[in-house]
Image 1 (cartoon, protein in one colour):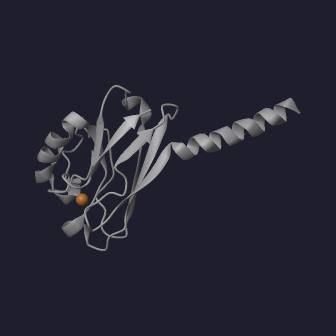
Image 2: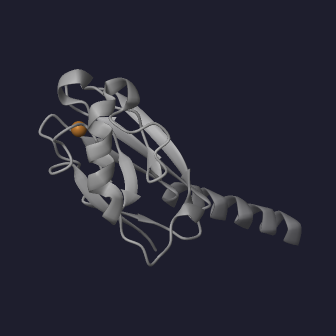
Image 3: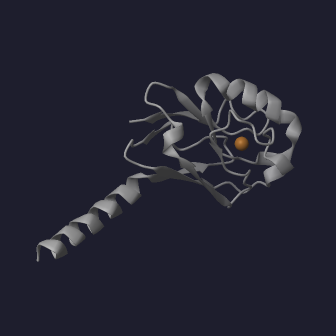
Amino acid sequence: MKTVLALITTFFCSVVFADDCATTIESADTMRFNKASIDVPAHCTSFTLTLNNTGTLAKNIMGHNWVLTKASDAKSVVKDGASQGLANNYLSPNDPRVIANTRITGGKESASVTFDVSKLTKEESYLYFCSFPGHMSMLKGSLRLI
Ligand SMILES: [Cu+2]
C-alpha cells in the first residue's frame, strides 16, 4: 500500500512539475507579446516555451520569434542577426550568445523551443525578444530563474 501511495504521489508531483516547466506566449500584428516577464522555476531541468503568433500577416512582413539571451547580449545579437535574413531567423548561425530561440513565425503559426535550465543562473538578468529587424524595441520581456 505504501508503494502504491508513493507511486501516486510521485505521479502527481511530476504532473505539477511538468506544468510549470513550460509556458506559452502570444505575439500579434500589433508587435506585442502578451507577457512582460517569464519565471523559470529552478527545479525544472528543461523548460519549454511555445510561441503562438495570433496575427494574420505573413512572416516576411510581420514575422515573430522568441529569442533568449543575457540582457546584456540582446542588442548585439539583434544587430548581428539583422543581415542573416528570414532563412536564419534573423540570427547569426550558432550564435553562442543565444540561449534558446524559436524559428520566425507568421500569422496563425506556432513554434516551440525546449532549453536546458542549467544554462541559467539566478544572478543573471535575461531578456527575451523578437529578432526580426526593428521588433525588439516593442517585443521584449524579462526572464529569470526563480
Ligand atoms: Cu517580430
